[in-house]
Structures are given as C-alpha cells and as structure tokens.
Amino acid sequence: MNRTAILVGCAELPSGDGDDDALVPALSSLGFSVSWAAWDSGAAFEDADAVILRATWDYAARRPEFLAWCESVPALYNPFGVVRWNTDKSYLVELLDAGVAVVPTVLAAPGDTARFPSSDYVVKPSVGAGSRGAARFAAGADASAHVAALHAEGHTALIQPYQSSVDTSGELALVYIGGFYSHAFSKAAMLGSTMDSSGLYLSEKLAPASPPPDAVALAEDVLDAASALLGILRAELLYARVDVVRGADGKPLLLELELTEPSLGFRQTDTSAALRFASAVRQQLA
Image (cartoon, rainbow, N blue to C red; front, top):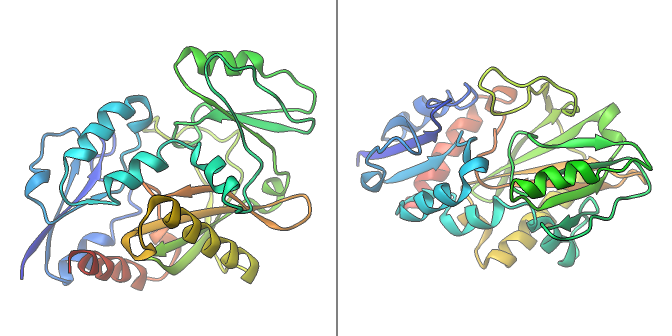
C-alpha cells in the first residue's frame, strides 16, 4: 500500500536543517511517498496519511496561528493535544508537581513579580525555541529588565537556577521513537553560542552519547508522567526527546521534554535509527 508522508518545516527551513535527511529514504523504503513542506505553505496536508512536524522553528513568534494550523491537520504527529501542551514550557511545573526530578522552575506571568534564585540563574520565555530569548544571570543580579522585556512581548518568564554541570558536560538528549528508547547524543552549552544562519536557533555542538542508567531511568519517568498528564499511551508519541542535565548533587534532572519539533540527532547515531522512525510511523497508522 502506497502512503503519503509530509515532513514539515518552516519558510526559513522548508526542508529542515539536514538532520532529517535520512528519513526520506527510510520512509520511502517502507512504502511512503515523501515530501517536505513549510507548515504555512498551503500544501494539501489534509490529504496526507502522516504529517510529521520536524523543523517548524518559527512557531514561537506565531504560536496561536501555528496551533490553529496544527488543529486543522487530521494526521499530525505528534498530535495537536501534545503540541499545545508542549509548546509552553510551563509543562515543567506540571511535571514537577507530578513528582518528576525537574530543574527547579518558577513562572512569572505578565503582571507577576519575578522571584530570582540566590545562585546563578537563567531566564527565558515559556514559549520559545532554539534558546532565543534565554539569558544567564550571575547570583545576585537583577533580571527584572529582561523579565519586563519578555512581559512586554506577552511572554511568561520561566526562571531556573543555572546548572553549572552544563559548562563541563553539557546536556544529554535521550531520543524515544514510538515510546521506546532509540539513541542519545550530547549537546554542549548553548548560552553564548552564535545564531544559526537561518536566525531560528543557536548553533549546537552535538556528539553521539551512551546514556548512564540513572539518566535512562529519569527519561522513562518523564515519559510516563507526561503521558499520564496528557491522557495517552507512550506508544502514541511518535517521537520524544528528553533533555537531561546534572544537578549540584550529581543526580540527573529534566531540563526540557521536546515533543513537538526537536532535532532527533539522526546524524549522531547509526543509520538504523531512521528506519526505526519510519517503522514507528507505520505503527501509528496501523
């Protein structure tokens, strides 16, 4: 049976950034006709068997419009309810409340007075992608001006103590496909990095990684808790990326859970990962 799959980018990256290139032959080998399209291009998304968000990295500035488009797509992966929940990082507070080990997170909505940690800390918009709008502040520094700027743009500010382990060991990204662990890669510290030529995200230094057992255990807890909050089975998530850092005590903490359009590090792992992804797409359609 021939099926159609559309990989979705944005106007600046209508065919992604190259990380997903292996998905086209992998999906084709399993019977899909594959194309790329920007989410706001007017392509016939409603006719596709699978519409897969991959590089929609301009959504943060147009989230209401983007969510309206997502809701209109019958066969969206991940589905609309997941995207709506995950594109606002206030989900981190929900996961904290559910007992997951998350980097301590405080929200300051427009009109609220922000409370800053006594240690070095990071302030970023709760709706954002590619680390845009994120800034690091030293202990005792007043980030009120940065928070005010975020509020002026209609953003809720998300405030977290800076995890110094990022400076030495960076972040660990664990990738799940169809609810199962697939592979992992490391990400060097991004704050202070230069913007990519597309202007959508900060450049990253990535490398293959083998996750230690405690990081895998945390990732499993995160996906179970998120699935419970969303009222879905883990298998209903075509893809997930769990970004983990080490806290001051050396224990792993969730930094972000990416369920909408994350880079999945296909260039940082073996070629069979793309085939696992393609197989999971078929499973979603079964």
